[in-house]
Amino acid sequence: MTPDRFWRLIDLLDGTADEESVQLIEAALAPGEEETFADAVLDHVDRLLARREALVAHACDSPYPVAAAVVAAGREVYERELTLDGPLDPAQWQAHESEELLVVGLGEPDPSRPRGSDQTWAEQLGLHLQWRSTQVPEGVLTSWGAEIAELDGVVGDDPAFGRIPTDDPQWHEALSRLAADPEFHRRREAVADLELHVVVRDTDEATLSAYPDAEAAEHVVLVVPVGALTADADRAEAYVEAVVTMLVSLTED
Image 1 (cartoon, rainbow, N blue to C red):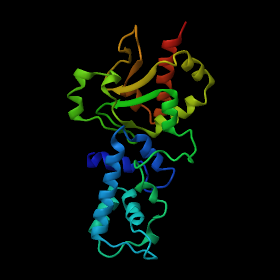
Image 2 (cartoon, helix red, strand yellow; image 1 turned 30 degrees about the vertical axis):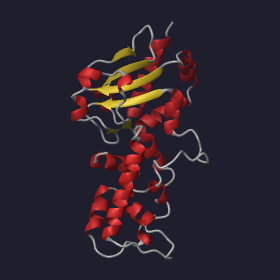
Image 3 (cartoon, rainbow, N blue to C red; image 1 turned 135 degrees about the horizontal axis):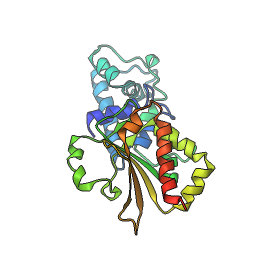
Image 4 (cartoon, rainbow, N blue to C red; image 1 turned 135 degrees about the vertical axis):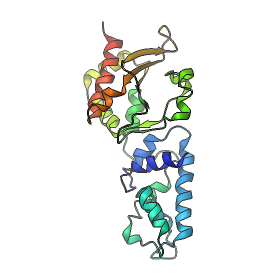
């Protein structure tokens, strides 16, 4: 995991790690990234504690949540704190809640947590987002980059070659709207055997493709021009329209 990827994931916390905010990171982690993310958190915590002591009330208390709270505050804050002298004061940081950041990716999902999260919706609805564009608006996290783009002409949009890890809070909002729409569920049930993908690209026209082929389709991919997702700050509505367009095309009589 690159430093940029790590800090983009941390940015999802909006400055504070707690039970709710860390779920955004869990939803954004690509398969296989869990362990590397957990290692990166620990590396940053260890680095900070090697530089600065964390004040704790009792000898049995751990300094790790204090340092984790600094990591959760973001790259700029973390790097600034590395340059300072003196101990870290837990009163300045929400150390207790930041314990959540220390366990992201280290185990199975907590069964006591409420279901219906954004990631669960994505899995239950069979809807997947990829952002394969050089134009990335604020709020969108994507692993798309120059190295992957070099292979683009070979692998194309076939999900069999893997998906580009992407996260966008407005995609989550779109999923919540769709999950509450009976008409969506009616049409989705009609093509329940298909996994549906929205792929944002630097292109001028939308295209709909089936993989491995139209006769034995397992995945359907709607490529959406990036302009349709960047023309308005409300991407959630554009995402909903893209999914509806795909379903109508697949289920029209």
